[in-house]
Length: 175
Image 1 (cartoon, helix red, strand yellow):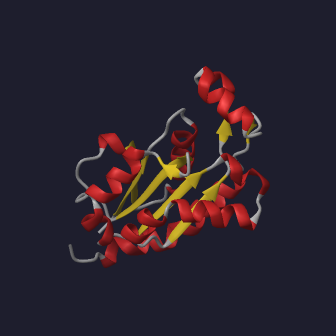
Image 2 (cartoon, one colour; image 1 turned 60 degrees about the vertical axis):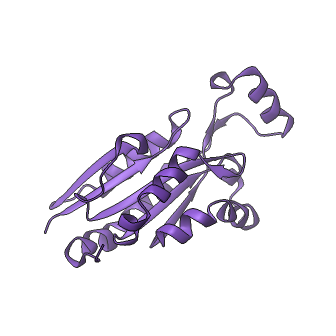
């Protein structure tokens, strides 16, 4: 059975969508179909042999639509090889303490999905995309504007998923 891998994401200002597309491009291989969609466009996981779910962290949580997606599809996700990724501007410094903090922000999602891997990536912060109130709140927290995504790290993580996700295409778990 050929691999049919879903990459579903939630994105507020487009940075996570861009990461999802790069992950999809990286996973492209003979015998694999890659579908990259916002979580709002995915109703049925039955066509897929594996899934990757991604969301940025805002106010210490995944976006609500990403969490709702994971909860709504918990049974199907539990039957598939699954990975997930998060973007958080605070991950820009690469500190283990910050990564552990961000890891705690997605405990519910990780318990539901039982992911084979979790990618923790720094995000992008563009003040021009924020409302004046949100911009002031972010600036007060001392978060710098900029694009801190490390594309090599993102591609390396996705490359590491290729074998387990493609192998999962033939294994299948019972729903």
